[in-house]
Length: 225
Image (cartoon, rainbow, N blue to C red; front, side):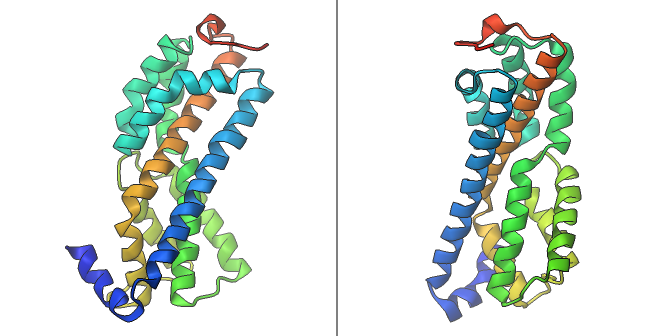
């Protein structure tokens, strides 16, 4: 009800043209999430001589739960059991890296924050200077590390980043209306960014376990040395 009240005036003045901008934001975020998972994470595993295909097969249930719950913390028990049962990783490793990653590893969150700030800036006609962009990168990096691993925590950090780059969401302002639009689709964006975050935690755990010789490779299908 609150979000509807905030964005009603925006729809009254701009009509359904704004929906196209929201669709572009969703598409841009998911392109970033997929790039992070398949190019960055896949490249890391390949460089460490681990089969990315086998990895995806073994962790698909974890990724599905992350997508559904939108919470790294809620997915944590499944992540730990999957590492032990399907990836052959010692509990001493996963019990340390996964809780740590659930709190500080927010790659998908970083994609979301950057793109959302640009969305608000474009919607309000504000041009972000190079100095503002550098400040935004720093704020997003630090803010994403401190973001709670629970559903719906991203917009809280987004508000802080918006204030830092001169886009305060004051009552009745265009920035507040644009922020309300993002809140309206945040569930869709949150599902993707949580999946990217959790997948990154699992990749990091695999790399640590392999480097410490605490992984049973026989648990992997088509493992390539």
